[in-house]
Image 1 (tube, one colour):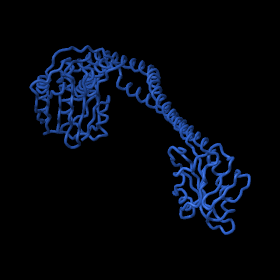
Image 2 (cartoon, helix red, strand yellow):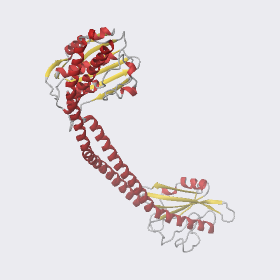
Image 3 (spheres, one colour):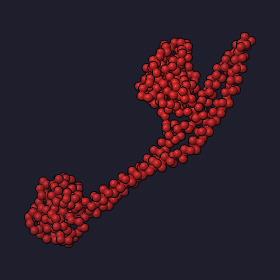
Image 4 (cartoon, rainbow, N blue to C red):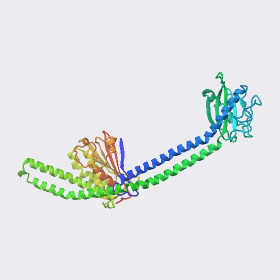
Length: 471
């Protein structure tokens, strides 16, 4: 079943101005696009800045670890296979034999601003040798650094990098592992692994990330506020043009009604002497009467809609019983229903009260009933219902017509939209009825909702708050 809420009340600035619903939608869309572009631009800049800073801060550490990896590889080749030795100098200063079978001395003066941890593994991930302490530090090598998982990855792929958390020892440590090969035979000898604390860099990146997120959130809120203001100012000329257009439509409709009424009256007077007219002349006069009646109805609808849009219609505030109003509407359309072999049923609540303009609400209800009669085939039925619950009084019209698919019901209520003309017995109409009904509903703080199931019928719900109307 297709279901759409065509209109809902808007309580706020410009709620009663001409085209308020149209401009409200444009206002929100302009604000969304403006703020969306700003947020996306800031997010893109923030991401680029964050990763550039990450590469800058961690790049120097990776470079240092690369130098130490190359140095440890050279020392591995100069020492027995089960021992990974280094010198008491840096990677560029030569070396000496290790001090023991499972440990090796590290340079007393490291070529790095922070301690560098070193260890060697065989191809099965067994620890062969480890530095007794990181160069430049009195602390031992953290146990988390000696985990063999990275060495296993390096043994399979040739090189691997990761970051481990060592807790209170050194915080986050960036590890780099590289497989060591015999330069003559190409045989894999083991894995040399080095690492350095990057806790300071990680803390800096966390702070930068938090600041960037905060900046994006604040900028987003600011862009929404600025977007609302800019969109409002951008739409001011359009609002003025639309208001002038509505005023022109109202004036033109008002001026057209008088000559149309005179033209129709003159044609009807001539038709009184039909016997003295040629048959073709009488048919022409009948066409004139029918078309002037149609044009008069169109002018009246345009005038009513223009006045409703501009807020020039004064709404009375009186107690209305929707059940009594529905019964009156049913009596008024009974003859039309009988002519088209339609059954009109009623299911009225005992009391469905609201405060509003009786004539306007009756006009809206009559529009819905006439539409149901127009689009229900002969032999069908139209049911009028009233409901009262949760502080709202509703007038419901159900028919057994052909119904409407979702792509059509989404446009129902647009001005001059007629939908599929094959659905009705007559193609005559202005396409303004539901537009007028919606303006009456919104003027009373109510809503107009359509529900339709193709092949089964349509349900129109005119709902009002029981508190009162806005006139």
